View 1 (cartoon, rainbow over the protein chains, first blue to last red):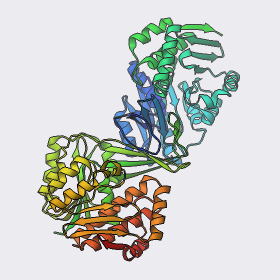
View 2: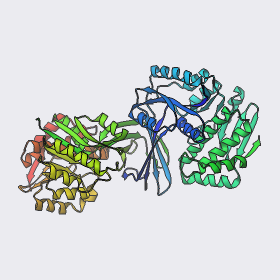
View 3: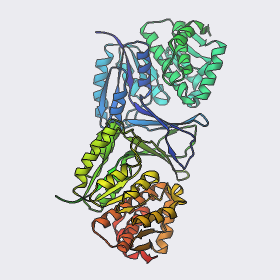
View 4: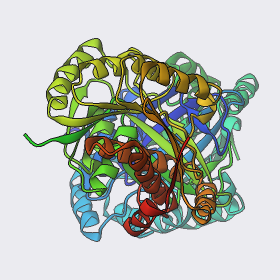
Length: 311
Length: 311
């Protein structure tokens, strides 16, 4: 039995990106460029892990012809459970005149209780050979908010939970090995609760890692808390990269952050090294011109240049 | 051999419609409602003909998993030629707060010369048993502007051409049985050339039918020209229906107009009756709450209520 990192994507998406000159509401647009790739947070984390040379297996729920398109684009070994509903699309319209991204995210298919039961049987089998399990992204309609909590309880392998809102809070109570609340588009929603969340993690002795965008990240564990940030010159560049390419690189930074934490957990890295590596990889990802990519040389340079500080 | 109306869709689309509360460029949107259906002008015309109880066969070019989704939703018998490229999507974002539709239309796959040759062989076979052929919609990248002209020359059955720009002008020179230039979103482009186009049709003795939206339509033939319009009360309603539901019902009105003309040509209706029927059906379609639908009773009432006038 060879150990792998298992990524779970319960609501995968076909990410469709359109390039238009300018988005004008109420008007028809000829799309100049179309790119399509398999998405959903868990899938994106799996892609980064594969780029790092890690053994990774992607699982989750998939359905319909849109699901077939997702599967056809998966860059890693996979074992998804089929559902009768159709997997969702997420359409991003990229306006070149003002560099703004406008996202239209479908909610996803309604999952039946029987389909969830079938998935769980498969999950037990896959998780039994996993070194680390990553649960990432939104839940599709039909699944209870306790879905991630249930998987955490069933998994003998350590679990990283990258979720938001109620599925995150329920999952937290099931004692995952670490949580990485998504700090991009959900920053506003979590913002005011961040202190509460860190406090809850401390009470439950659950490590929590937060990205702070170009400013780095924080890792809070029962053994202590650390912050890590890239050198000042890089922080400036990362902030600009975030501005000039909208939400996409921020998102891929978050995916890379979670991927690095998963690999670090599998290798039992100590907390400061774990955090420094995750900040180096997510920063390299934000700096890359293409979403989801990173330059290995930049990543290597940042691994030693990131400043870690005990809080 | 049973005769059918053959519809040709060289650039079919998976029409995806999203309902959002308000479209805010640069922001993420949760999509409240998703509807997906097979589209492209020829497919839409075929759907109307099937609703009218006509025998119809849909052909064209199709590719990839998006093409599979189009095929899966086709409401009529079909025989499409497979291509290696992926068929396109057309995403309409419907903003409920201001009733505005914003369309993002992909250009479509690049068609290879060898794929076009294979299609043509199939077309010859299918057109030989067709009573009327409908060529409708845009051409995908890779096809020459003369593509419709070539099909018109090869078809022994009368051909209705519903196209725009250069493919329309080239097609016109190949003497189709009738042209129905699309008067919706291309109105602006054709507008100033409308008089030239009618003049060209007269010189070539090609009948041309134009819709005037809620005001009815015009049919100009070598035997004479006619206009037809719905009663005043209906015109008022149709104008409001067009306003309140944006471009969608105007589009389905155009599809119904072409479908009625195809059926009328197959039945060898005389020009005034042909035009009256097409205006009745397109008006009923514009008045229907759901895009692509029409109320049979409204259609029947309008068939006798439409006023036809020789110009």
